[in-house]
Image 1: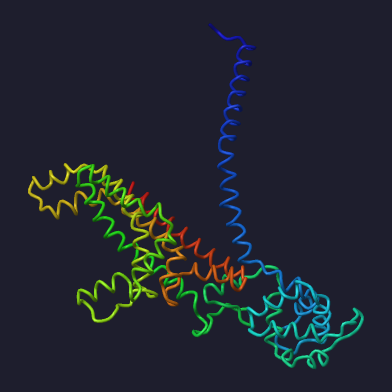
Image 2: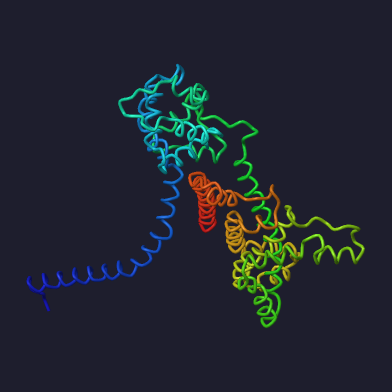
Length: 410
């Protein structure tokens, strides 16, 4: 039956309506997921990025001073207009929250700047009018430190609402008075070493978990299903226990009079307690115990899909059992090994509670300092910068994993 022109047009319109209906249904189905990602992933990351670069305190607290110093060459003495603008800006924020924000921000640049700001604010005339001039001699009578150009350089460097200060500080870099990025002195360098320590401990933990997890998963695959299920339940038990509870248990076990040291001394294996707590050893023991299941599960799931007949066939054809394992069985479990290593390493890099409770001062991860800047010093810029760098590092590691896994697939 041949369709007429009106019938063809009606059929085409009906098809288009159906496509639009399907498209709208698909959009409605993915809307909850998109909202979830937006609220819990994209917005926090965007906030992290903004906080790591936002620098509103100096611009908001010293607007006139910033404008004057923008014309200053930073080599010659500060112009009189700069002293006058500083006095009027500080007088304007007397008793305001901006004064606290300003002093805290400048104190990051130069220790003691906070006391200088409040001392100057408190000694300025309370009836200082906008038309009244307040020159360098008046400011220097309040505090001689204003004659030092480094305090003015700190204000001039922060004359923008955005700054790389926090990100540079997180990498042990800084902008000098000439506007060039330089390395901080060795006695002030800290964060690069902390990042290196974080990745070093995480890598070693991942490798130990790989050795233990692979052996345990291989043993579970070879045992009867009933026994394997029992072992599987035992492995899953830690997931049902709070991490804080497990770490507290390790503190009891590893302390000088704890279970391990008491047993070793009763067996005459040592004459005095071995230091197992508040050091790197305690961090490794606690982290491995917590993270080991994350290594076992992906490896075990891949091993269950590998046929044992392949290894037996290689042995029956004259291959040594070890050679058959390395050349036949091991390559088929690479995906599980890669997934387990990635999962354990990424979780380990972000650890905070375990190193904080069982480690010493030289065993803390970068996440400890994120919490320190957030809760103790209220320096959200540094906390955001450190968190952002940690996020970028994790993303790079995951990208490398995706790249190599795709190469293997090809």
